[in-house]
Every structure is written in C-alpha cells, then in structure tokens.
Image (cartoon, rainbow, N blue to C red):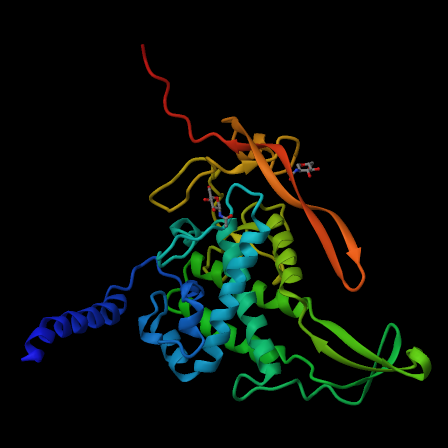
Length: 368
Ligand SMILES: *[C@@H]1O[C@H](CO)[C@@H](O)[C@H](O)[C@H]1NC(C)=O
Ligand SMILES: *[C@@H]1O[C@H](CO)[C@@H](O)[C@H](O)[C@H]1NC(C)=O
C-alpha cells in the first residue's frame, strides 16, 4: 500500500507546478517589464528559457521568445549586463539602480514612469541586448546570423590602407532583433510614454553602433605594421554604459507634439533631441526619502564620502540629514613584492578607518 502514502505528496507537487506555471501568465502584473529576464538565475537560463513563465513579456515577445530560443539566451545576457552596468554607473548617486528581489518591474515601479532614470534604464537594457546578440552572432551561437560578410576587400582609414579580415561583428542582426523584441512592448498604444520609450530604446541601440571600433592585426617584416588586417567589433560594454551615462546627464525634457506625431523639447529654447540623445517627460523625485509604494529604499545607511563634492559626498547623498561615523578595521593587501618567478606576494595590513553613513530619514521631532 505504498502508493497511498505517496498520494497526497504527489497531489501537492502537481498543485505547485500548476501554481508556478499558471499564475504569472494569468496575473500579468501591470508593472512588469521585459528586463525581468535578467533575474532568471544562470543555471535556469544556461539550457533554455521557459517563455511562458516570464512576467513582463507581452504576447508578441512570448512568440519571439518561443521561436528564437538561442537569441533569447542572448537577450537574457544582455539585460543582465544592462542591470550590472547601470548599478556601476550609478553607484555614487542617490538613485543607485538597485533591484528588488522577485519584483516584476525589477528596479521598482518608479522606473516604469517617465523620468531621466527610466530613460537610462530603457536605453542601457536595449543596448545590452544589441551587444549580446551581436557578440553571440560572431561566436556562431545564433542561427541565421554570422559575421558581417559585406566587409571584404581593402579599405582605408586614417592610418592608411588595410584589408578586411577575420570576423566583423554584425550589428545589423542584433539591432533588428533587439528592436523587434523590445519595441513590441510599446506597439499597443502610442501615448507620450510609448514614444519616449521607443526613442530611448533606439538611443540604446545607436549607442552600441556609435561605439564600434576597428581592431587590427599587423603583419610585416619585424613587427613593422606595413600590412594590416582589420575587423569591426563592438566596444566593451563599459564604454557603451559610460556613453549612455553622459547622455543621461544631458537628457532632454520633452512633451508630446500637439498633433501627437512625436516629441518636442518642453522648453522652447532647447534644441530638438537627436536620435542618440535620451529624452524624458517628467522631472525626477529627489530620491531622498524611502518610497515603499514605488520600491525606492532612500539613501539612509548608504556610505558617503565626507570630502567629496560630487554626488557621493555626504552633503548631497544624505540630502542634508547628516551622517553617522563608524571606526572600522579595514584589511587590505599591502607591501606587495614581486617574487622570482613569477608571482606577487603581499602582506595583509589592517588599518582603522572612519567610514561615514547617511542618517536614516528623520522622524518628526517629538512635541512637548
Ligand atoms: C543601493 O542603495 C541601497 C540603500 O539605499 C542599498 O541597500 C543597495 O545595496 C544599493 N544597491 C546597489 C546596487 O549598490
Ligand atoms: C573621497 O573623495 C575624495 C575627493 O573626491 C577622494 O580623493 C577620495 O579617494 C574619496 N575617498 C573614498 C574612500 O572613496
């Protein structure tokens, strides 16, 4: 009678499967974003993406996901890169691009609004996907795409003549797939926010293309670079992220044209944004206080720099609330020496350092 014992266990297991599989697609949260794919764990994605389980995908995205499992792995990788580099670019700012575990919007709902920060998140995730798909094409990891075969014969640049060779990254395929997949989210209605997102998605795609560079190998007698073979390659994603951060700093505030046909600068004296520029519709909050409804944690407890005049300085980062100082023992490598042969040996040093942390948001003063 063993099966009797196993009975309820099996039922529970089946119920769990049903709940896990069905709930996300039935209860598609309104604030879900496609870049939720960045939160799927690596072990899960290394084999195959289960398109039906991912919150944040609209129907067209689900269809693309099912048809192109190889490209979807690159989409996941691209969004993960987008999140990592967003955090790196904003580590010294009040808004630090942190993610909320198991939240379908990933960064909190405030990022799905139309601020400068939303603009950056859309652009960097879009750029990440272009980059990852392009690289995957060159590696031969995606069907129907390969190196750019239009680059052949000889060509000139500032340093003279060279011959195309090797595998030039084929950015056209990456751009086309990123556009089809990511922009699908905005196809349903064309309100100001959709236009903004489409513009910033495109700025992200263009950022990768703008950063492409030539890599060359020299041939010639004793290292003289008389003959060069070159190929075109996408830059490291770090430089694309830095480019987009500068675009964030110079982003243009826009509003919808009265006829609804596009976006124009909100301030008449500003020049129209270029396709590579970021645009936003509403001013950002000051990101000082915690906002539980939008998932923003505030800057209480963040480490700040007492002497810096930048955004990581205690004055700016703590929004004038002040900071607490803690003396902590810091261990680091020191007195490193080169040893024959071939490694570097270091000692471990301990020093006491004063670290500063923003005070939490002040409670109202007690009345008495
Ligand atoms: C961002 O700041 C919060 C505190 O406000 C901190 O808990 C979180 O770890 C930070 N995230 C990143 C990615 O640095
Ligand atoms: C704090 O800022 C100063 C000035 O910008 C810089 O020289 C210093 O390295 C920073 N300290 C830390 C711990 O980051």
